[in-house]
Length: 274
Image 1 (tube, rainbow, N blue to C red):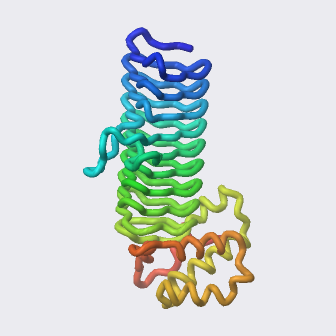
Image 2: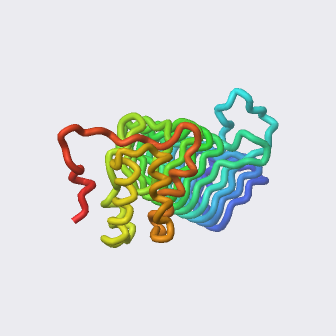
Image 3: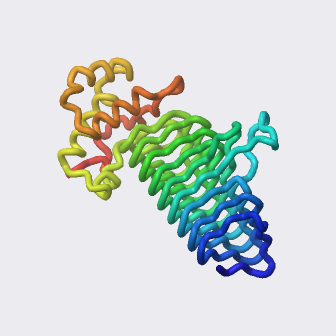
């Protein structure tokens, strides 16, 4: 274990084997840090935090701060739970849950770039990437392998499906279905075909997802009508198609992002699947 003399580590904090703590870092009472984690200079790990192994907490990052909720009471017992092999870069912030016994959660192998923020009770699954200054409001949830472009902002309670990607500087107040590309303010612009290929989905799987996407967004039907139409062939759904439509069915009052209209144009180049 390597703890810089200027670091402040509460004696009750639990540090695993080979943890490194940099200059002027603070680890509060009750924190639990797994083996081989690195806490860089000036970072703060609150007592509400439990993290697994091989994580890197960057310079000046603050993990486990109080939620930005006017109804929050400081005496509330809540948590931040972080998995393994995550990289949380400089000046990122992750707030603890706002309700008694609740948690903000991160899976494994995620990458938060500089200045990213996870609001209270937000949850991201494995292999999620938040580029610089991406901001998640409270209770936002993201499935596996989501990529969020820099400067994007997410309203509280938004859901983002697996393998979705958002353009930088996007504003999101509605749910983003799996496998789609979100852009601008509450729009999807097509399918994340490159992401699907990289995840190992074959041409037939991608085509089935495209058919589902077209039914939802290009058939002229509204969402309820498209779901009714899709249900007629439910027995033929592939797992990816089921994932797509079940996500859409689970959308709350704000619904899912609409399709960005491009008059006079066909399919986007990055949506075409040869």
